[in-house]
Amino acid sequence: MRNTERVIVYSALAGIAAMSFLRGAERNASARPEPTPSDLGPADAVILTGKDTNLTLRNVEGHLAFGEQATAKAWSIGAVGSDKIMKLLLKSERFEDERKRLEESAKSKDEDFRKRYTELETKYKDVDPKAPGFEGGRQEVEGFFKEVEAWRKEIAEKLGKLQAEQIEKAYREMTAATDVVADRNKVDIVLRFVPTSQPFTSNSPADAMLQVQVRTFLHYPETIDLTPELIKELSLKDE
Image (cartoon, rainbow, N blue to C red; front, side, top):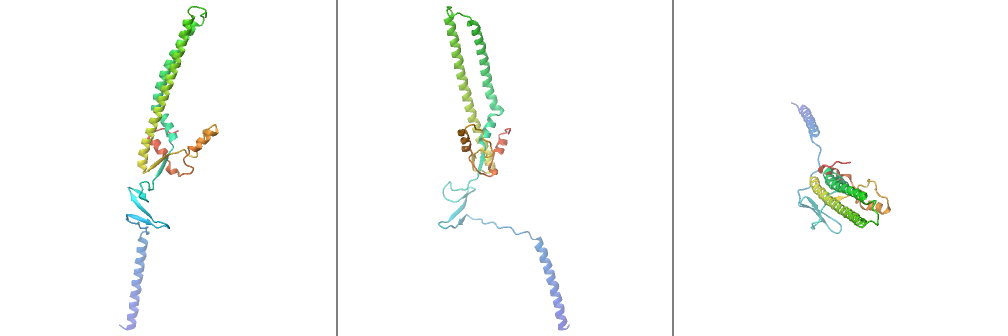
């Protein structure tokens, strides 16, 4: 084979090889997944340089720590509309049943007092103040009213005590359920709050100012609100 022919043949073979290589490269490029960012680490710590001092970031029990102090950590935060939760709890059937039992007992006693009052009125309404039995009747009526007053004071104290006990019980149930919801969502700190959109319920400047003071947040992401999940956890009926 002449030299010229060899050059032509070799050139053709080289061209075919080049074409095959390019086609293969194109196929590989189309099949190759998009590059993803590489993870940084694993590492025990990351040091961020600063103008005056460096900042060391570490993983301490699943929290991002930026110092040696126990409080020098990044905490996840949630919030609960505690006022709404407490009202829903206190209006729930089991809490209402306790109050109804006391109210029914008081109603029964009140009916007994009304009956006795009617009897006393019938007995003494026509008695002459100068009659011998008038003074005894007056003392009996006064004793009756003292008994009624003492009973009303007693029932008011019982109702107040029951309400106080129910408020504490509802609070304990709310905090226990909050612990469950917070653990499930990996939330470290849960604050009480009133949504900024909630209307004011006030009839005086002092009440209106109180409505401002109980609103912990002025601006917040809606994702921190755990109230709906807490309502489900407590099996409450939202209004």
